[in-house]
Length: 286
Image (cartoon, rainbow, N blue to C red; front, side, top):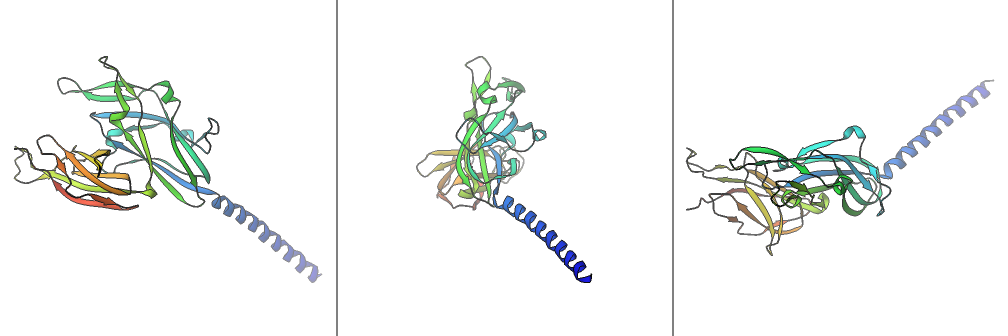
């Protein structure tokens, strides 16, 4: 009797361990077959006070077809409302932070809603809001091609650099503005960044020393003088440009009342690094 009791107890525990092993294997397989993906939105600035955009859905597709689109997150995560002009000096917006099946990731799609607006200055320098018309083709989804293969267990970060100047088109002299998004996509794992601080003397500021300059345009060019992207400084004079491919770059900085600044030496960027160029003091125009 004791033998049979011992036998059944032992068999019971073996069965439990076996079930746990199956569950662990299943969880392990799930982990092995998935990858983490982040989408971060940044802005290349334009001459606007605000650019307010509504994103109603973000989807991905492992194929090149028009079928198979899958939404990131849940419906409750949308809409995402963002003023693109705030995405400067390292201030980006995390749009997506999800775990998805590994394998091909061919396209992503940003679906834009209605009600997008633009804030500009009138002839008297006063701000006013105008509609930012979004063509139906953009409302159905702006496709961005990634054409990559997600490896199991890895994290992928993509920078979506929204070029505002190229994305907003004034319809003649009608006063109407249309939104035609121009977004550059680059993987953070294959990119570098450059940061710094811009200062300068402003006449009649009552301060006899250089101070941080806000809303200064910092442009990035290649050695061959090919324009790449730009950003603005924040209230502390800080700027931060990310998502740059490995290579050599030149900075050009413009601000009314100051001479055009151009970096005397090329800035070398390597993958995964931030090149801090330090404090740049602009020279007042004579």
